[in-house]
Image 1 (tube, one colour):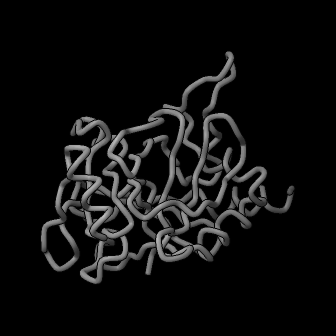
Image 2 (cartoon, rainbow, N blue to C red; image 1 turned 90 degrees about the vertical axis):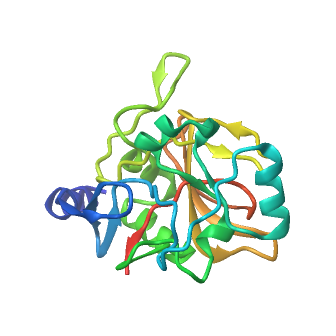
Length: 216
C-alpha cells in the first residue's frame, strides 16, 4: 500500500484542460497507465452528430429499454443536475455503433475498470480514493465523501430504474462499461456513500447510469 501511495502522489495528480466534449471544457487525469475524464459525460449527440433521444417520462424510458433503443435523461429531468453530474444513459446508448464517447475517447471495458480498481489497491479500498471530497451523503453522522486521492472525482449522480423511477442521488454513483454480462445485462463500476469499496455489478441494460470515458 505504501508503494501504491507513492505512485499515486508522483503520477496521478496531473490534470489538464481538454477541448470541449459537447458540454463545456473537460479535464483528464492519469491513473497508472490509463487516462480518464474527471467529469461525467454530458453529451446529447452521438459522435457522428445524430441526436440521442431524451426520455423524460417513465413510459418513454421504459419503452426505450424494452425496445433496446438508446436514451438519456437528467436526474429527475432537471437540467441543473446535469451541470454537476452529467447525464444518465441506458446501455443501449453506450453500445450504439454511432459512438457515445467523443473523438479520442472510449467507453471503458470491464477489464479496464478492473485495472483501475486494482491499481488503487483493490475493491476494498479503491472506492474512497475514487470518490469526490464533496456531495456524498452522510450516514449516522459519518461522512460518505472520499479522499479523491486518485483524482478520479467520482460523483454520486444516482441512477434511473428500468421502470423510469429515479434513485439515490447523493448516495450512489455508477458508470457503465462496454462489456456485456449476458443478453439483458452489462457490467458497471459503482460507488456508495456507505462503503470504501468500489464494486462491479451486472445491471439490466435499460437502467440509467453515468458514463465516464477513457482515452482511446
